[in-house]
Amino acid sequence: MRFSILLLLFQIIHLSNSFAADFFRDSTDRILGNKSIIALPVVFRFPETGWGGGVAGTASWNWAKDLTTAKPSQASVGLTFTQNKQILAFLPFNIFLNDNKYYLNADIGWYKYNFFYFGIGEKQVEQERYDVKFPRIKLLAAKQIRHNLYVGARINFENYRITGTVDGGELASGIIDGSDLSRTSALGPALLLDTRDAVFYPRKGVFGEINVLPSSMIFGADRNFIQTTIDFSGYKSLAKKLVLAGNYYNVFSFGNVPFSQLAQLGGPKKMRGIYQGYFRDKNTLLLQGELRWEVWKFIGLTSFSSIGFLGNEKDILRFSLPKFTYGMGLRISTKNHLNIRLDYGLSPYDKGNFYATIGEAF
Image 1: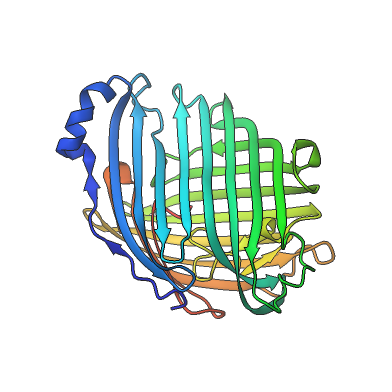
Image 2: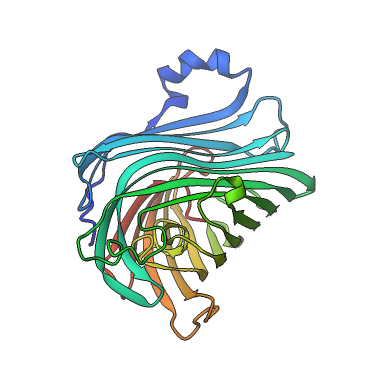
């Protein structure tokens, strides 16, 4: 396995059932209804980090003033430090307000880290490690305009500063856009459809977004480019405890796109089984399928597979060169079915990859 991961989940603390939660309950019940908090102290080891450790927590809740049919909200927070003096701080959230009339989604973080670069398109290069510092803000604000349909705006900001590369590597050569610095600042419209019967573990329905994001010097970017993204997931119950889930993901890019903003395949959500960014290009099309089985009480199993394609201005999508991954996973269900997810993915291109996180991939 490429990452030689050692992930120690020392404890899973359901604070909603603990004395700590009792301390806060009287004050929070006036604002929050049904709520749950999970804390995950972790220790890990990756080749690019050495040993690392920190804490991550996730909270889910319903607003006390909302109807019982309102969708639950979720927020996570994490802070980790590594032996190689790297820092990861992150705050993602999904919030429904005023009986689902408003929807907020965010991925906010600050990172001092390093990643691996494998080339662009079908041109693979020997693995190059590079160091980077960057803040990231991805924010969506949307309003319900009719039942299950939302319209809103998305903001993306990232100041990506490369602080170290491999001598003699492709990034060190300076021929790759954004191999020293790239500042992305984008603002554009978004359209969402949400017919899911549940937020954290849907058994039927559809959830998806279409957005168009121009990153422009007008907004403070250091270059101009446009990306359009279509990301839709569908769910169907095959039996009482068996769900089939599918995901369609499509990105088209136009203009001077830095390598860090190219469409990527891999990672814990978009093509498990390869390193995130193992494949990247201006365009991508990804199809994923997953079979989810609730085996016993809070224990579940999954099997998943995916197929992806890359493309650029010359070849919109290279359907003759598909990419494949597949794998299996274990699920530990918590309150509101916000699952702890343990997945192991495989591919023909790389050794296996293990993922430990909270919430389903799609």
